Image (cartoon, rainbow, N blue to C red; front, side, top):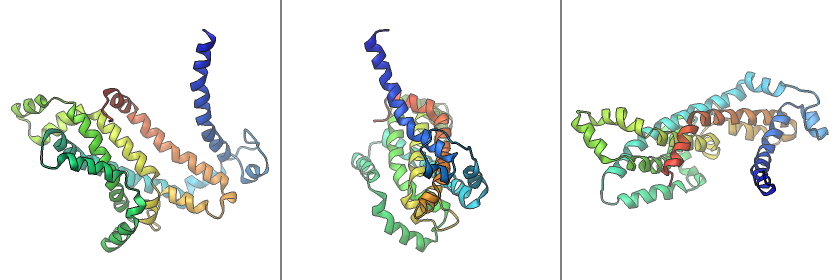
Length: 271
């Protein structure tokens, strides 16, 4: 192996180590006491402790934050896919007045900062009784995840020849049967990609989730923000442990859809 090749191989390794350093330090802090974190710089814990993790998994004020987050993330993904799939099919297969302009404005709206809609959401949800409801947060997130999902799925559907639609009709499939038995399996990579993007947005979004929840449905991000406000130095180990646990659902989601994501990029459907 030449020296130049060795240097080239070292670059991604060094970059990966650089990216993983904050994660390692987060895990390292989660197994330390607050006293050790504030007293000395140590690469590994002097005294391994699981106290922070024990608090997270036994205290309802902590673990319910994860439960709440997972509930409205799952609702968001389900509603988004159900709404976006027929819309993407319509954009792909039909030509109607204003289709291109509407498709453009879907994407333009996706770039709108959530803070702009914060006050209208709070007032509207207060009137409808949706404050502190899982479905309320999920619907608010759908406003931002549906446009990007339509955009992604439209590309995948457009890559499927229209002859398949016609053949399915000749074979006696209803429109619903064609969707469920033929179209969805064919665009499974696109649905996986869309679900992953929905998960990423809904899992990490805090502003709307915090404003639209009060007590019962507070997400873990809001709980961590509150706990780390005025008492950061007293809760560093606990916050580190909570952050580590927050990463786990994302890793699990990625393990489920990584093949679909890789295929989606290979197909070139993420424009």
